[in-house]
Image 1 (cartoon, rainbow, N blue to C red):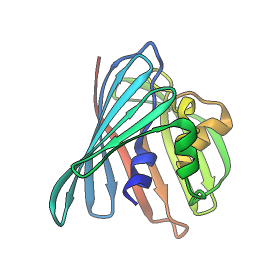
Image 2 (image 1 turned 90 degrees about the vertical axis):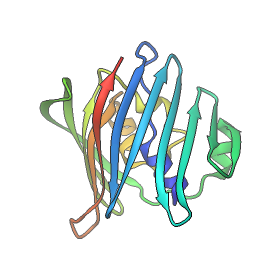
Image 3 (image 1 turned 30 degrees about the horizontal axis):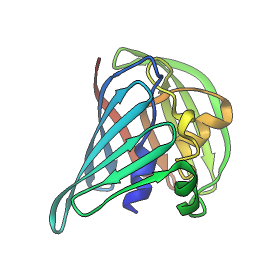
Image 4 (image 1 turned 45 degrees about the vertical axis):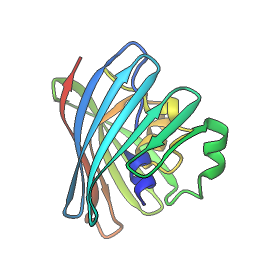
Length: 182
């Protein structure tokens, strides 16, 4: 579960952009702060969880060829090929994705609306192409409906806001960028 949430949150920005993005992931009653630190061809991400045993911080470092996961209890590095072998069957398959053509400004960035239908429900995402390219790491994130939706329509972007819905229409998970700095 923790690895799936981590995979659902992680993305990669354009090689010419570096900076920090802070966001909040909400699932049920839990709000999880997420910090992305981008540099040329790499991403460091940190999430802090409140758990029964106390607070735990999960770190993830991505490059073009490897992924390193670490927390209070473990530290493991995988090549892209080895990591793909560890992945299980996706929880949801993207059935279609549609660039709706709606635009708005969020956090000072131009964003466009993407609708994604999966085998488990619907997702909507406001995507900015000014700072991100999720599709470069699609091999690492086969279980992420946002990444796979972007990949299927050929949009290279970062989700500034998204909501993933259950089949009954209730919100399963939401994500919102709270600040961006270069």
